[in-house]
Amino acid sequence: MKPKFATLILLTLLSAFLLAPFVVSPIYLDALRERSIELHQFIRGEIYKQATGYVALAFVIGEMLLSLRKRGRSWIGKIKLPGSVILWRSVHIFLGVGLLAVVVVHTIGATGLNFNAIFLWVFFAVTLSALVGVVAETGVLESPRKIFGLPGNKDLVVTKGPLIRNMRAVWLPTHIFLVSIFVMMLGVHVFLAYYYR
Image (cartoon, rainbow, N blue to C red; front, top):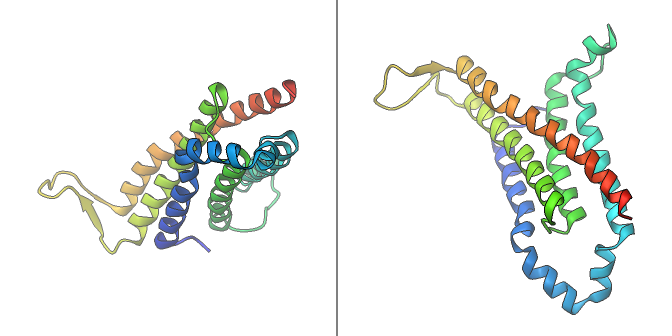
């Protein structure tokens, strides 16, 4: 069930499509406010924000629980969790793109102000770091080439294994660091959402 390179490219394009509302939100939110005050008030209202926020939180918790498959044996002991790492990684990828869609619904494509804007950009960085890393790795793995390097430079030639390890040494710690920041900011976001109700 490991996503192929073509599937990952489609997911990347879908992610870009899902991010498009954030670019044009100043235009359509003003038009919505002028033409349909009731709908605008509903999607800016507390019930809508809470419902979509809980769905987004469920996706985040689901994403975090997926790390149990990788680390579960050392944390829990000798309990064998079902499924392969490839299956769980695939679910993690699809849930991540799903979370991006839920965030678009939750925020209505508006980037927000102050803390919420920074929080949203950290989330975008988390998504981007994951997509770039997984797409690059899969592209190398599925490539028919055996050796990679710069044209004309025979000193920097590397095979697939070391290339993937070097790429993973960059993108995976970056992704984990950004996820850590995101989770801390998520806690603050939830606190602020209930504090300023």
